[in-house]
Image (cartoon, rainbow, N blue to C red; front, top):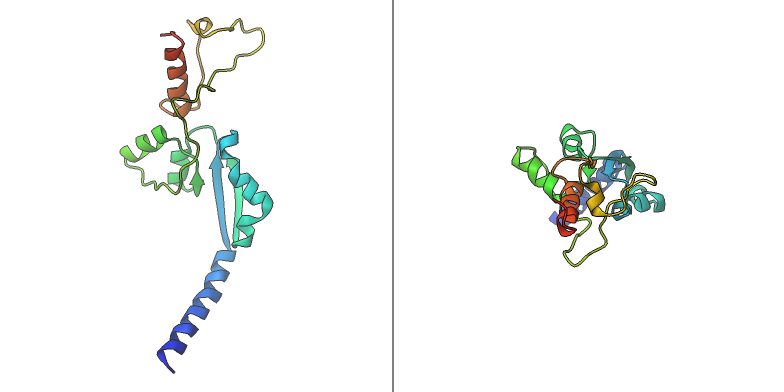
Length: 154
């Protein structure tokens, strides 16, 4: 058998058995419930994962994504830059696959929402109050601190 026929046969076997292995691939994708991370949900709905032999499901997350990735509870997850830096600096073995949302200093569309009847109508009204964020040092923690700073609240 010529080298070309042997190579072609090897490629055909790899594709055949590779496709069978891919068809069995199941992944869990962790995303926070925000619009910037809706693309995996759309891809599942459109069947893009299934077309490629992947059974994907979404797990909504509220922080702690890096730990869930390390433990194997998630296979892919949206981790903000601060959380990723903290996790890898602490020794977790995480790899960046692709970037997600981008925040710019020119973007002024950040803010904090308060409940009706809370008495909070301006940034200064937060003085003496507690503000909840998904995780200390994560994107929302940093952005809320910056929002207070920009609005003159210590």
